[in-house]
Length: 193
Length: 193
DNA sequence: AAGCTGACCGAAATACACTTTTGGTCATTT
DNA sequence: AAATGACCAAAAGTGTATTTCGGTCAGCTT
Image (cartoon, rainbow over all chains, first blue to last red; front, side):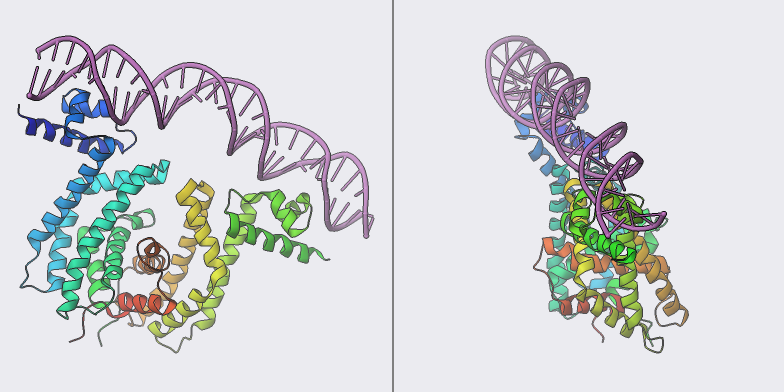
């Protein structure tokens, strides 16, 4: 077994554990056990628990960006791209599981590191969206507003429909989520006269 | 001093204290002191701290509804009404102060009663909005979607722009908040061709 | 005597001392 | 040279003493 394999073993084990138990309840010993390595081995690849956690979050963001990137065609319309990106994002459960677990942890026991992590992820996503939104504004496809505000609202809308709403209403299907996203982002509620 | 006066004294003192110190840090003794009454007097009007808190929240919701109601003209368009309701709501700081303080308390120390209270307020507002949204759908002014989901999104959008965004971006002016609300709710981001 | 009060009570929160767990290291093994 | 797990300090957890606070009510005031 080469070094890269072990690194990946650790990463996979940690991903599972963070998504399953949250930040706090994930111990380095447990990660080592799941990864089938000694505890010390983890520290040859990651300086500490925080960095391991950051790495997981970072690669989750990167994975989502990669998926989004693969769907974006420069020659297509912004909203066409948006629709297809939403489509693949909604399909990808493993990232969602981690984020949902961390949200629960923040809500239930308020782990600061979990809260920090989620904020970092949100900022990463908003930052990425911002670039795309700016291009769409420059090309005149969408209204010229503050790209950061628009990106932030897009993310909040997504979270509201996929997560927050479920405390008040039966979960929406992927199709419904896409429909509502497009209504608010593209055309608004107003009936076209 | 009549009984109604004393009741109001207590209510005003409690409002101030909850908005200033949050739920947990508001003690009945302190409320009594601010209200210039004995502690026992509070209990002649309210059975316990919870009921006092509920009463404050309830009257905050009612006050907001009354302000909204005053702006709504049945003969005007939904979006025209919406714009003017937002206008008066954004002006009204005292409710916001209470809600913001409670949000902080939930975030910082996770007081369950504060969390419960905010949820109750949110549900109250969504419930009220739902009626209005349903009428606008029935008259064909806005697209026929699930009124509860639409109302929920309206509230979340409002909170995102007035509160959540401020951790990432300089606070928006009232005019900007109204502008963004109308963009997402009425016409969407798409540039009209 | 009706309304109001604050000393008083038990329960719940806090502070503190002590125990256990856990993140991180490093001498030893493979 | 790479990997390990016993080991250590620090952080989290637990049990207990102490304080605070919600709620009561006997007595005072008007």
